[in-house]
Image (cartoon, rainbow, N blue to C red):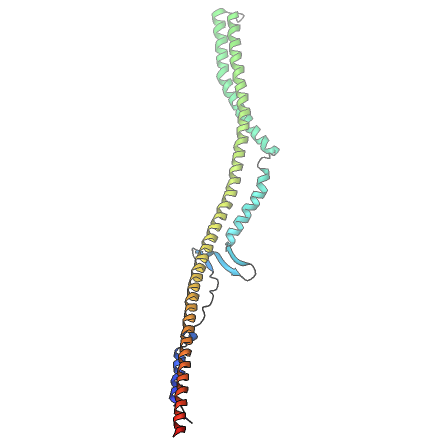
Amino acid sequence: MFNLPDRNYKSLKLDLRAYRGGGDNEEPKKPSFQNSTIRYGGTDVAKTYNDPTAGIVTEYIQTPEEKQLQEWRKSQIVEYEPKVNTWDQSTLDGFKATADANKQKNLTAFNELYEPIRRSTRNDFFNRMGTLDSTAYLDRTNEMDRTENKALSEIAMDSVSQEESLKNAELARRYQYLNYLQGSNSAMDQNAYNAMNYSNTGSNNANSFNLGNYQAQVTAYNAQQQADAARKAAMYGMIGSGLSATGDVVSSLATAKSKK
């Protein structure tokens, strides 16, 4: 019986090990979700994370002071908005009292100015004519009465107008305050939205990069596996051919030996 040297098997085993190639390569692991956190002034203000039950979540992290302020503004809006166009009697009475006081002030100022003119006119006519029973004097006093009535009417109208102006000014102030409350909350909401958007964008960018990198690794891994498989197939083919040739040699040797 013919025995092949042991070293051939050892070298064959070593050759097979050398040609395994990708056998030592690990399949790439799918990347885990990349969280994102936005910090401002040393404080976390927004974060994006993968919640086991809710999925991907982006949230704004309010400070206790922000939360308290926002809740107060909301309560003020709820309480204040229905009352903007409503007038209680004490407020209306206050407008009227202010307008009446101004009206009285104007009447006093008019009388202080106009009464001396009346006296001067009356005395002038009496000194020149010795009587006030004259057509000229009556015409003059009628003209002065018309001037006075017009002035008093304007003073009264000005009082009504002032009362309405006070009401409009108060209404404008109320709307300005309401707009301030709503605008402040809107600005706070916008800041929160911006922070969440930055956090979400950062997380998306990181996860997109990781996914692209993972896909590139998978492509390279698959290519390596295919190359390794091809090398193994070629190696096994070479081994098969070698063993066949060796069998032929052994057979020839055996035949030659038997003939002797």
